[in-house]
Amino acid sequence: MKIVMVLMLVLVLVALASAGIFMLRRRQEGGASDRHMARALAVRVALSVALFLFVLLSWSLGWIKPGGLPTGG
Image (cartoon, rainbow, N blue to C red; front, side, top):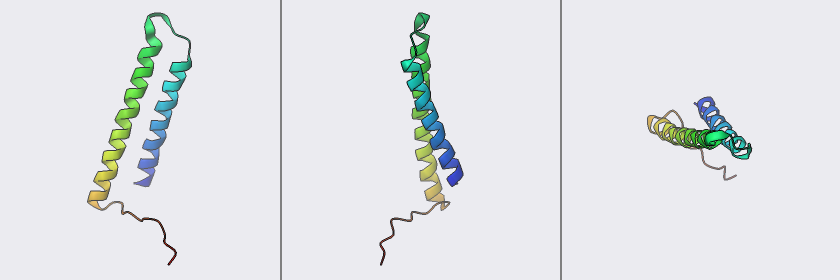
């Protein structure tokens, strides 16, 4: 489960980076760069929501358990 969560988090970061690249790239004819940036940001939001729901589902099914911080005592 942790591998799936880390992979989804990496995909979120890749989508965010691609949106940044499209934002910094020179504008093309017809605003194609804007459409690509908007699509990349929409993918990032969708992946973030899916990751959040996957974590909730995993917790409710007992696949993952909260560990908390070690208290040292």
